[in-house]
Amino acid sequence: MAFTEQDLASVVGRRFPGGTYTITPWRAWLTNDVVLAPQGGEHAHPVFMFIAATSAMGVSWDELFTWFGATAADGPLFGDCDIEINRPLVVGGEYRVDGFVYEAQRKQGRRAGVFDLVRYQLELRDGDGDGEPVGVCRNSIVFPRRI
Image (cartoon, rainbow, N blue to C red; front, side, top):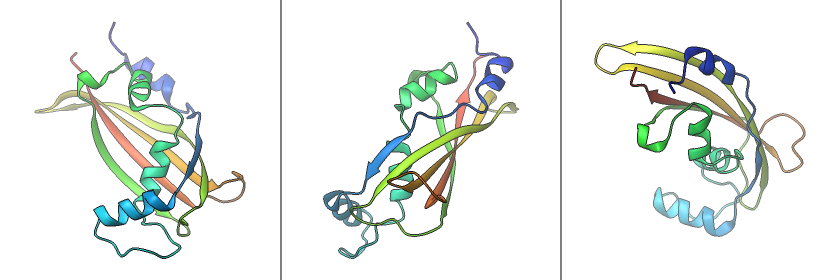
């Protein structure tokens, strides 16, 4: 059964279950090693804004794809990522993640054919989950459709 535009519109506003993510010292060390950043210091590399957000969104990638009537075999593509950092993440810090789908559109490309462009936002807050977000990660996924 095809995933319709009405199905697509019904997912806008859906909230992620969310979760928590702790930036452990060993993960901070490994990440700095991979991105060739200096070791040590109290602040985690900015890439942890994405790592923490997507690791603690509360669903697996496969589960997220099913929200949009797709599987990994359908070839979803990472679209873009916009990261807002309100203050640096701290090594050893625990962050609460929550978020929601804020836009979903069916589009037609001349070469790509029909696809759905889905945008979602994940917010990171200090471990208690209160207060202003430490950072916001806005991502998009492109779902090719065979219509």
